[in-house]
Amino acid sequence: MELVPFTDSTSLVGDSRALASRLAEDGYLCLRGLLPEPDVAAVRDRILALARGAGWLLPSTGTELPLADRRATAWWPDPGYVAVHDRMWRDRDLHALMHSPALLAVLSGLFGEPVLVHPRKVLRVVHPRCATTPPETGWHQDYPGIQGSERTVAVWTPLVPVEPGTGALTVLPGSHRAGQLPMRLSNNSMVGWEADADTSTVHTGRLDPGDVIVFTAFTVHSGSANEGPRLRISVDCRYQPVSDPVCPGSLEFDDGRTWDDVYRTWPSGGRGDPLSHYWRRLPITVVDYDPGPHSAREHEVIAAAEAGNPDARRALQVISVYGGDHASRERATALLREPPFGASRVPVTSPE
Image 1 (cartoon, rainbow, N blue to C red):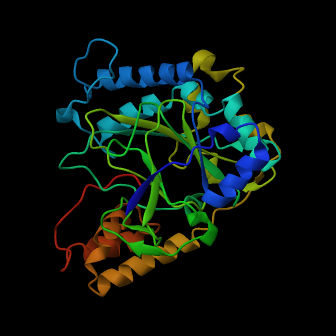
Image 2 (cartoon, rainbow, N blue to C red):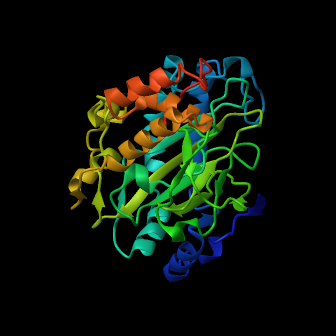
């Protein structure tokens, strides 16, 4: 695997045609300093304050970012981690950051029309690797999980400096051109399978707060391991042309929460806030998510496990908890008790 620095497209900002051509060629754009660094720093500092209150950080002085306390390492779905992460994610300015005018100007130029910002932003707070660390995300494409518009792009941005070895994003340049790729079993990925892609050339590199990576829904990418001494904190969000269809899962929650629950924690309870339910004021078309491909994949995993393929272990563990139907969860659980899987377990984390 050859690691190549990101191709820097910052000089093309303001030239939508050139940016679109680069995105079509490489499947991603690296744009330095696109988000206002003071805004990023303010959000980061509030997240670190919550991490400090949770006991995740060592005492620190000066201006250096604090070190993580490895004795307090936590992962999803530990209830303590989930509770702290939820408080971090609810930060109103974290959501506002992903609506930055400079960012939306770039994206509307790429689309040639107004942008729908998916409200379900994703905050990732990754503790340094330790013995109980779950597998990495693995090589994947976003489209199978979100569906809706094939023109959707993701924006990934760090709130702390990252580089290879401390959780920098990695992408496979040009991988989007093949469309949706088949999957392969992988015990080293979070969900147990990953995109079957050529990983001989990987683009990655140092990213600082304010930098963004824009990539298509079909660009194969992965988060790298955090081997450093600090928390790796990043945000990602998806964007699409407002005229394209979108699935409900990109807009609303599927776990019993409501946006009103979130807004109650914002100033004035979110009343009068332009971010409150903003997508409901847009002329969007909502279409159903098709669970068929994912269900078919689960059946393929179970068939591979029944045939004795040891590479199905991680996928079975995930299906046993998050499987799409009761029968699949029961069968996966049963197979995990049988050879060649036995009782060996790997911590199960949220596929998100």
